[in-house]
Structures are given as C-alpha cells and as structure tokens.
Length: 256
Image (cartoon, rainbow, N blue to C red; front, side, top):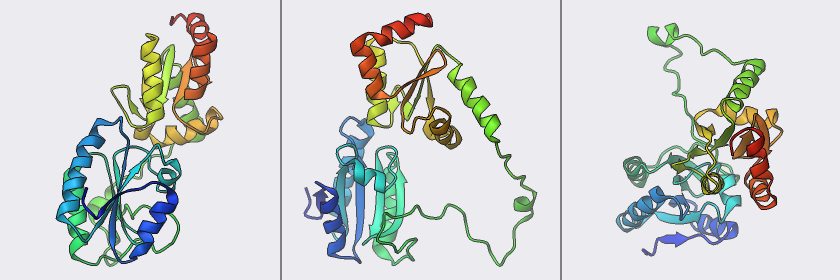
C-alpha cells in the first residue's frame, strides 16, 4: 500500500488524518468486504494513490465504522468523498472509476472554491446550476413544475406496495445487488428459508423511503412486510426464525 494510502481505524483516526494538513486534498473510500464492486474499486483506488502522491487516500469499512458512514450520509457502497481538509469538494457514489478519476484530476490541479467550510460533517455539493444574469431559457420557462404528492397520496401508494404481494421487502438495492449489509443479510435469510418475496428499492424513491419511516413507525431499513403488515427489520427477522414465528406468519398468509 502506498504511503499516502491509509486504512482508517476509528472516527478519531479519521479526524487526525484530515487535520494534519488542512490544505491537502483527500479521498475517503467507503467500502464493504461483501460488495463485489468495492473490491474492483479498491484496486482502482490503489492505482490512483500511486499516481497522485500528493493526495491522501483513506479506506473506511462502512459497516465496521457506522458513525463515520452516518456523518457523511453514506447510504450505499462503494462511495467516495473528496475533501480539502474538512471542506467538501465532491462525492462519487457507485463503482464509477471514470467519474472518480476525473474528480481527483480536477482537484489535484487547481484550487476550487469549496462548497462548505464547516468543521461539521460536509454537506452535499449544490445540485442545481446557478442562474445566469437572472434569466432563463424558454425551455426552462416552459418546463412544468413536478406535481407534489400529497401525504394521503403517498400513504395510499405505500399501502399499495405493501399489499402487492404476500411478502414484500423494502430494502436498499435489489436481492441480486443489495446496497447495504443489513439488506444483504435479510435477503440471505429469506432465501435460506425459501421465502418468495417482492422487493422495493427505497434508494430509487426518496418519498417512499422517508414516508415509510412515519407510516410504519419504523426508522430504519430493511422493512419486512408479511400479509400487508410490518414485521420489522433484520433483528426481528432473526428472532422470528429462532422462535418459529416466521414460519407461522408465512403460513397465515399462504406463503409457506
């Protein structure tokens, strides 16, 4: 491993690394050992570390160090955060080697105006382009405003999804490509017990993702639904397997 490539062991370790040289650009690689795309990107990062010796490359196991992941709002891996000191310069989500390389190349050459100057966890960079002389094009003016979904409409849509099959799993990613460890483990348990289920990727629908937390009074994901009713998350599923309640619940809805 290159001398500018460091494996982070704790939140304190990360803070120390970032504080050594506040003008130094760093790339923090959030990864998980079970995710195949992470293994590929780890190789890319290792090569980038050799090429860009002035940049600090940091490896963070997203699930072993959840406090760091949460502070940077990491929802899936791989994910990369580019900083100068504690200032956010950009982020790349997913196994996009080209985008990561281009972002690093850009900030290794020039000084870019930071999007944040706080000592707190960096905020995401702006997602909307600044206005030009206060004017807009005809196309922009003609573009209709997206319809806002009311709470009642959202609740009805979520209820429809929950009732769409005997067993529904609200998860991050898909059964073939889960994007968090808890979703991966939940899918593994369901498959191990030959449970047929429909899944819904909450990362593709922010309204459902936030709405379900209130609707089901359950703040985390995945959420397992059987017969239209919330069972719980991974820990609850494990308990249901151990005490036989999973089999009973599936039999009650004809899914056993």
